[in-house]
Amino acid sequence: MRTRKASWIACLLVLAFLVAACGGNQAGQVSPSQSALAAGLKTLQTAKITYDTTMKAVADLYAQGKITDQDKAMAIKYGREFYYAYMIAVDGLQAGKDQDFSKAMAALSKLVGFVGQFTGGSK
Image (cartoon, rainbow, N blue to C red):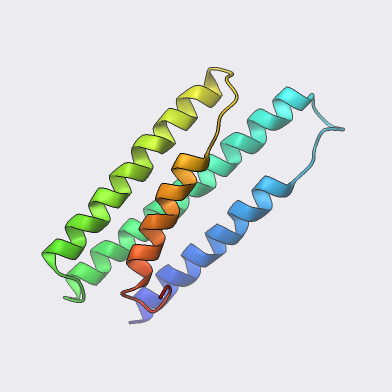
């Protein structure tokens, strides 16, 4: 139980950092394109940490018998949706293209919301 709470606290902290990463302004220190790239990469890195933490919570819940095989499969499906959107966003950003992270963030939100129903983190 303590591991589950710690996992969700970590997940919530990471989400808070995700919001903070999107709000920073370093335009005076670097060029706008470099700042946008750095902010985008930081946002995606934080999203990936959230994904990793959430999938670890899925493994913990499954090991504790708190979710079924079907629940685990659904979480994995949502995780894959995020991961594919995440990889597309990372590749595009590294290629210098303007990226819309909305698909990756929507998929991450769906995953976190689904897993949260088993821990009381989302209703």
